[in-house]
Image 1 (spheres, rainbow, N blue to C red):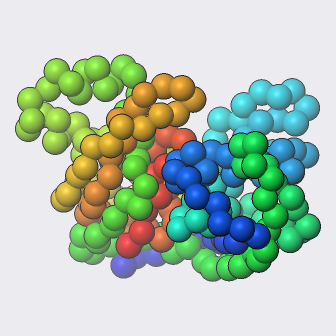
Image 2 (tube, rainbow, N blue to C red; image 1 turned 90 degrees about the vertical axis):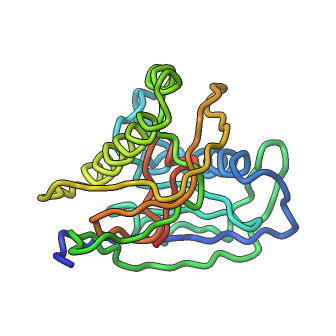
Length: 226
C-alpha cells in the first residue's frame, strides 16, 4: 500500500437514557437535526453559513448515523477535535418530538489511513449509498442489465473520487471500483424517492472504516467498512 494521507477521524457513540426504537434512516436524520440545533453556532455540524443561512457545498466534516439503537456522530479532519470537546452528557435532545437524554457518550479518535493499494481491497456498504439523482436514474432505467452494471460501477468510482477530493486527497492513479454484490433499496431524502445501493465492492484504494460516499452522507447514507 502506498500511503496518501492520514486524516483524523473521531466518533461519538451516544447511548440514551431509555430504548429508542425506530428506523435507522429516520433516526439518523432526527439526530442530525437535534445536534445541529444544539450547536447552531458551528457550521461544521449543519452545513449552513450561520451568518447567511446559505448551504455550504462541501464534503460534510460531521456526519450522523444510527446503529443498534445508538446515535453515532462522526467527525473528519478539522471537525475531529471539536467533536470530542463538546459537552455531550449535558445535552437534552429531541429526536423528532421525543425528548431523550444521553446516558453515556463513548469517544474515540483515530487516524484514517488513505492510500493506493497494490491489490483490490474489499468493502461493504453498511448503509445504502445514494449514487443516483432524478436525472441519471431515469436514464439508468432505460439501460440493459449489462449497461446498468457498468453505470453502477461508473457512479461508484465517481462518488469515491468526490469523497476523496472533499477531504483534500488526490488519487494519483486511475481509480478502479466495482460492485461484487449489489442490492437495490428504495430510500427517501428530503421527500424525494431515491434508489439506494447496498452490498459489497472492490477498489484499488485503501480506505478507512467509516468513510461515506454518495449523496446525503451527513444523514447516514453510504457508510462503508472494510
